[in-house]
Length: 313
Image (tube, rainbow, N blue to C red; front, side, top):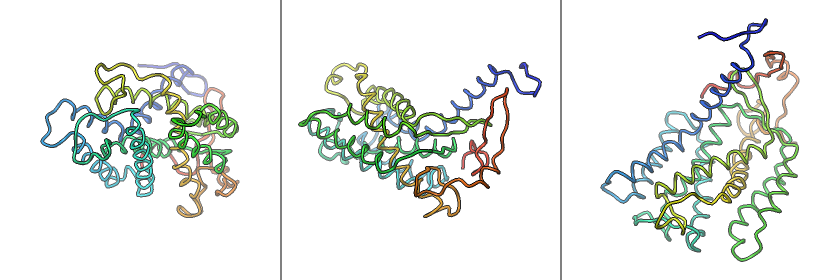
């Protein structure tokens, strides 16, 4: 198979774009290893008879999976701690939502408390694992991040999931506020030899959309059910897409809070991957070390801090 190249020896724009899309898809795939294994466990436990209750088996499976990811160095202990934070936050939300009847978990289990199986927190932890994995594999850098305001809005988003059952639903005003705060916040990422950027708010929306798709698979596999899915499964309401996009912002804040300390509390002397007024900044020496390549006349930056960003570590 041959491809047309220009005078500089690079593939044509179309071929290069296709290759980049494949690279991007592969990096996304390997970043989703924990969610993929989780869904595999959901599928197997639904169709295979188990010697213990399904939710009990899933809890054991997820705990072993988390330890395995740490043991083979797919995740660091800091990332495991962040993911555990996702688990606790998600479990708190699940306990409340099940009690008021927003959704339910069919089946009994020893590890089921107040109608919620303890494994449920791992579904939120899977989101945390994806963010940590993608941050490393795409060599993410975030500029223009406003930690105080973003964290405040993320806390309001979480609180609104509880309070909107009694008070006015403020998700739209909060979402508008989030867009305003993030209007100058960009996320930079590497695919192959090219460096790209996108608005952080757009990244939240894209992740939220795929989480909505994942939610449809989860309810189809009877991990949980909404009231109108108890008898016959059907598509989760599209409005949940917006809810997931907002929830991602809270997930991001947990990871960014750790990443913003990079260069001060750990990995001393290296630039923080989240640029804030308190974080270590990229110096001129770092910029001089960056390798600049040109592809079809476009400038592409290779991130200098960690070498080949698309290699797993």
